[in-house]
Image (tube, rainbow, N blue to C red):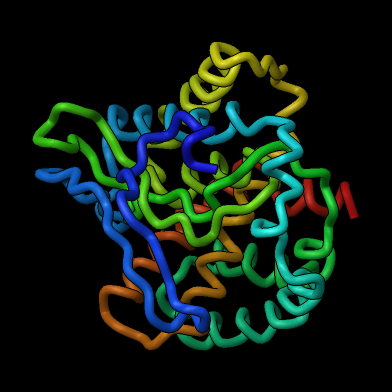
Length: 265
């Protein structure tokens, strides 16, 4: 799929694996020197704009392309949604036990409310519109690549899927840029994405994306909870997951994301 997209990712020079998949070899382009994105530190508006432009460079070229959206390699396991919906309340129980003293009660309430609606959240079947990165956050981005010759490269494509573009946009704005920045620049970033999509031939109105944006923010909540619950705890990990949860939950509260979910279930 990569040659069909306009996104800047490290070029793959060689990729092969044995029949079991246990042994493999990947050779990528070296895009350094570069500046690693930092989920905990957040970013400035210039980095946020560069990231949003790359999101559109994924979404627009793949928009409505059945050969990508219906490809066998991108289809999730048949029962994945059901399993995730069943597992999420357990993940939230672990998350609450670990972080109840560290996360604002209003933010924890968003996590609890999503757990109560987890079957509906993971089970909803909105028709996919394009490819989505699925983990579109700062830790998966390099800035000022090749010694500043290019603005950004997007890494970590293991969660790519057919979906709705606001999954990436809502996730990034909630989890990636920090509350201070999104409170000042949220509308600008969403409008920038729309403008980039329009320039690439996909013209969407505000109303067409608004519901999906409010729902897409919740992807940051569920990702923070699942990731925190089922990985080995580290100091860096705790700081990372709390940063994600604070950003996503505060934005979800501001945009009524739980209410938007209730409207479609």
